Image (cartoon, rainbow, N blue to C red; front, top):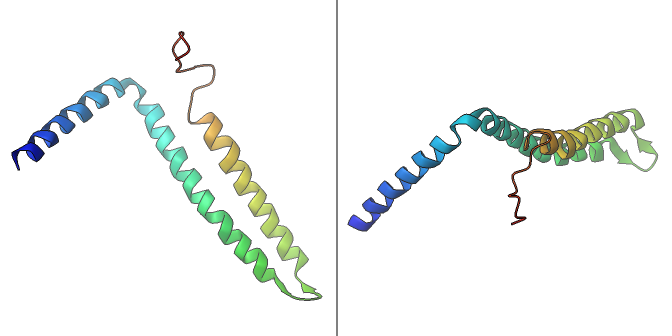
Length: 104
């Protein structure tokens, strides 16, 4: 029982030390979390759009092409935002690298 309490104390100290180190990067951390949330929401929204697109195909010869076009446009927008913007511009500031100069 006492070991668990000691581990919690060590974990709390470790977390506080890490938070101290990332204090000056808090804007980027918050921005990364927001972009991650947007990415997850949009990734989960894409199958919903596909389901609505499938619902537009009623049967042979009864396809709602105008509704299908709207669903396709939404899907393209969601994929572009998810794959491009959030992953590229929010996760790392432009022109900076976090690798050490030794290459490891």
